[in-house]
Length: 346
Image (cartoon, rainbow, N blue to C red):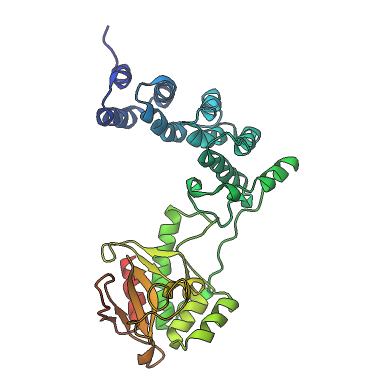
């Protein structure tokens, strides 16, 4: 009797000992059979996760398993995987996808288990926060693998459990200025162009626990602190006040190392290592005092020349770091020109 293509792939997967070849076989399995034989493919992948001979691939397969599984499927497998140190991280999302709120109790137990890996405990807290819309992850890194133990907020998690697991309101969307929707001035039009590109990025990936790639209204305290230190050109001052970048990072061919555009909350800190010593706060010799760093690309600074303000704007200069001495070149004739360039590159 002829062996079906799916059965043949099943056998090859379990026999393969080369990681690269296994990866190719797994990709072929998903590409050719996941759509039409989803449950059969899931059975193969979960069987390998339980007893496959390539141990690292047992863990890697968990992402595919979680993606393929639907509600009320493979609950027993995910419950088992939750107790396997090498599989538990991804099993957290599998439990929530499979049984929803019924997974709350075991995941709280995992989060509070001191003998479990910190990354797994953090993943349990993060996934619970996302699923139930509670702010357990507010302000914490997107990747729970970077959390510290004191950031687990277990008291809040346990209080939520005692209250019978109420749904939360989720994280608030950052407040933006109305001019982004109806721009009129050259500055507003440049900001609106950038916002359009940032919105497309946010649609693909966004974690409102620590929002990124937003243009937001700056706090009065941040703007007051800036005003005490610098006399800014009006165009840049208004940009910070109305469209302050919040973790805006432009990754493009033009900025191959990525460009970080500073917001009002980080402008002072952005001068450290350039104009000021980060430890003592003293001025660093060799830095032109009229240059304000407003962005950097791989530590190469982009600076407004506050000594050349004209018509409410100022030119932007840049230089390469690590050259022994700063050698600045004029990069844009105005901040608005620089902003339009960033919007085009985003």
